[in-house]
Length: 159
Image 1 (cartoon, rainbow, N blue to C red):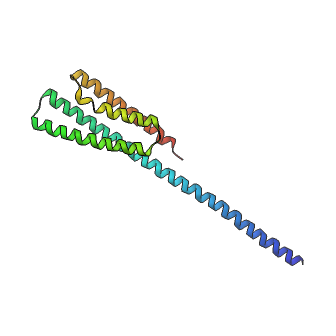
Image 2 (image 1 turned 90 degrees about the vertical axis):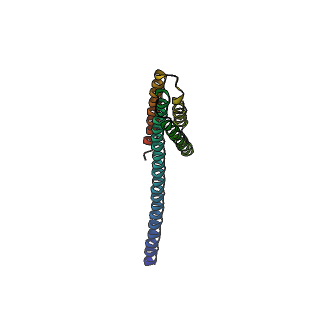
Image 3 (image 1 turned 30 degrees about the vertical axis):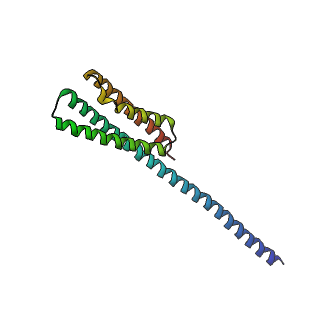
């Protein structure tokens, strides 16, 4: 009789140990999966934010070049090419802005991203050299604000 009880305790202990091990392994696997998912999401955001900032800089530069071309006088062919480049970069930047809006729930980040885009698009409407310099400086500051805001959100996500 004692051998049967001992055998039953051994079997029950083995089953309990297996069950506990299984539960802990599942929990660990879920945590690892969640960590992987969060890291992938963070990388996607980082890529979208850096792509948007890079396009903003290029768009800003194209707007400045176009303004100087029109207002400081260069070849008309250059003006057409610079205007075309500006349009292409405006479209690419707006596309990147849409992507950014799709992957983030951060209202402050979206607001500074939109304002950066809006103000950059106004550079070529400057009335004179002083106005274009003011707009250039404003957009540089807005792009820096965007990068700082994006950086704080991405760093805040590090698991």
